[in-house]
Length: 112
Image (cartoon, rainbow, N blue to C red; front, side):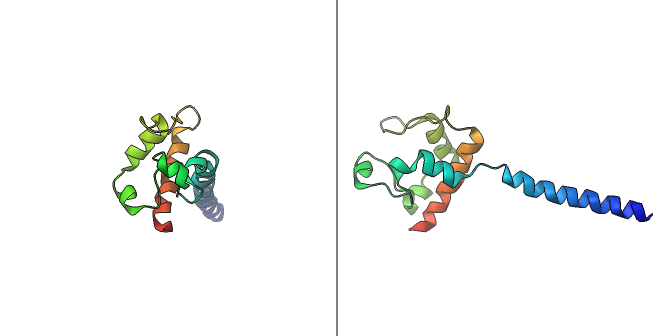
């Protein structure tokens, strides 16, 4: 019976540890943003005046954030945005990485 309790404890700990490990496998949206997006959209989500004139959005703007769904942003990142300089990243970033970037973009709303 005593060994049975240790098995239960071991199984519970393994499950708990795997949750922590799974989180470590998630892409870093902030790092991906800095590497692929910040040049045009600004490190903190606010584009430089030159890029703003080229229609690069201000990701800290509540109106912009509220008027775009996650699916719309994912599509724009993946396929690019016609009529703008926004290129398609579907060959550069995995779907999980694009999702991580979108999640990070959502944190910029509160930055302003």
